[in-house]
Image 1: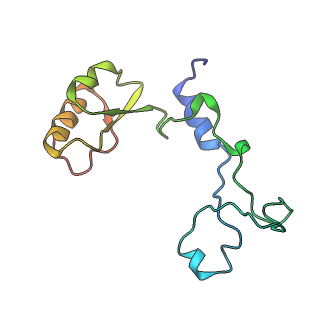
Image 2: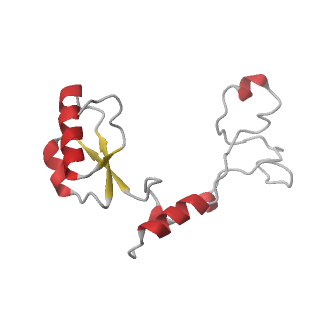
Length: 131
């Protein structure tokens, strides 16, 4: 994998081909409008499955994010999950954005957030923790 600058990563993330995939005929039925999500069309004559002109696109490999930026946060940093204060020392604050693990309690989470701020990390899910 080649080294990519943060600016290139941000540009690629913003300019990627982003399509919102929705199920076949979602606009026709109220029950689908309240629950917009992708469902693969499986009908034998389904025009969407047959990729006919004038019908919404189906999710496929061609819409995937480029390999060198896959998994990056929109800020251009690589996300890492941290479960204790010791794990913060393994990463460089300029390269990663920190997520506190979901199994970590409030007391330990506040310690991790405080230490991360002190070391210069960005914490993505600090929500409601007063460090």
